[in-house]
Structures are given as structure tokens and as C-alpha cells.
Image: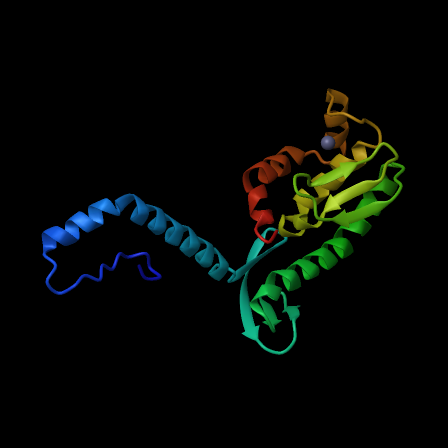
Length: 205
Ligand SMILES: [Zn+2]
């Protein structure tokens, strides 16, 4: 079986087609399993190769990978260049950049909305969260998932508004949603965007 998961049977020259067919039939389940394994690996490899574009603020930008001695990233507004010393470091480099950019973009916006709507917050933390886009603790500490950097800015604003309103309502009651709507009248579009596209923001995790 080669890399493309094709079956190659090496048989002695005197083996008849019938003998080969019998051998293949006997080994069918084993072969199917192996072929599935190869197919899975291939899919994984392809998904690795698909690291040719970067999602940033809701838009896809071309990503150029350059093998070198250092691990750096640059973005000029129209494309990303990642220089990498080791393939395993590409995602790490991208994630560091995403986290940094999200922090720079989101923190001032949290402060802006908190001040504008007179909402008292404690600490704001940017981190990777497996299942949440954001959270607000009982002591009004706000956590935001940096993977939101891949979402459009209005979606980031919606998550910020959502968590800020939790400083007033620790639930999702009608009054909670009414408050969210007063800050962000078109919040439903962002909520739906996350529902439909959220998985895309996880591709580097
Ligand atoms: Zn909530």
C-alpha cells in the first residue's frame, strides 16, 4: 500500500489471477481498515497543507510560508508571511500573533463600552477557551477567547457587549437580551454568525 492508499499486491510470478483475487478477498477487511487509516492521514495532511490562508477579522488573507532560521510573522494588510524554522512552529507563531492582536483590539473596546454604558468591570483576561467565546464571573472578571480575532469586528463587539451585560444580569433572561439589544441593536446577526462560522475560528487550536 503506497502513500495514496492504493493497494499494491506483490505476488510471485507463477501466482494466478484467481489466487491473487482469493488473497485480496481474505485480506479485504484488513485492507479496508488500512485504506481508511491512509485516507484519514491524507485528510489530515491536506488540512495541514490548507494552511495557505489566514482568517483575520472575518476575512481570509493569503499566507506565505518561508522556511528559514527564525520564527516570525508579518502582516502588511493584504497578506501574511510566516517565516518558520520548523513546521511544528507555524501554528504557534500564528497563535501568538492572533493573541497579541486580539488583546490590542479587544481591551480598548471593552473599556470603551464599559465606560459608555457605565458598567463596572474588574479584570479583563484574554485567553484560549475550548468551548466559550467569553465569560463573566460573579466578581465581574471578564474572559475573552482570543480566537475571536478571526471573526468580524461586529462579532467581537457583540461578545464584548454580551459579557458586559452579564455584569448586570447573571443570566440570559429577556431583560438581559433587551440590554444587549440596546447596546448592539443588530446583535442577532453576530450571534448567528458565531453559530454558523464559529468552528472556523478553532482551526488553529
Ligand atoms: Zn452569556
